[in-house]
Image (tube, rainbow, N blue to C red; front, side, top):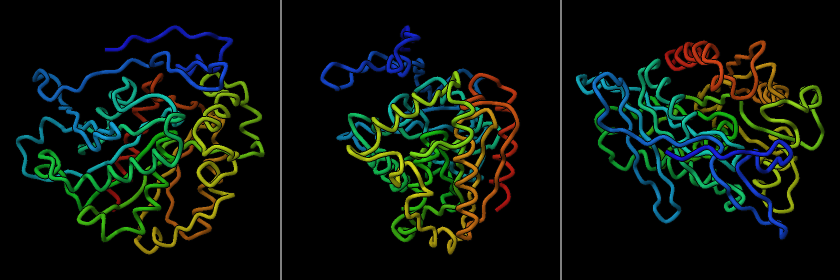
Length: 321
């Protein structure tokens, strides 16, 4: 397990586990959240099995799979959730302890098989690298992995992401909706965007109100976008601001996919998330929203009561097919 490195209160890059060098390049100084290994054969008291599988060795992309132990004795196929982790496109991985716990609990509470993708991070690999990696992971689901073949219902799949992963889930969903025949026999039923990470040049009211937010202050989101977007692009680029970008959702509408968007009032990004819901509805998408009082960005990682409140929302969305 990796150690958590000390961070400086005065250095915003250090808070992200990065160091900005004098020539403008970035050096990684260590994970801000420790990693956890997969465990395909845990003690019997552990209800979830996990394993890591390669997707594209050339790009060093891989996935961590989560399977309920009880499924080993069952012939019933499970819903499959393809999950993309957060981290502002720049930090964290599918092995980060936050996401290991989060995915394990979702697997347990929803009784689903989860595939959590480790994609390439910026700035070494700027967008659209993460989108490409995660689309490749969606196509990889057909590769014949034993857990997926034996236990997943490929006709009942969801694409989910939190924070930057929520942004990726939307972009991959848009692409997948135009490649339905290529993606088959995987059939997407909907997208789950949990506290999705979006931005824009003009500040929203919630960004102004929560500019000094302890978890993701405004300067930190700005740094994230500066490192992740194509060089020369600003925050109104389509990757960042779907309201400004030309987002064609006609195929999502014709396929009958639903989109769940969740968020908390204490998150500086809440207004962006509400804007997205409004935009999607105006375009005819079936949207389910779950915005709650209190909380903050990533609140479920620090306050378990928020996680326990989220799981029934996810379960209801998946069961309501």
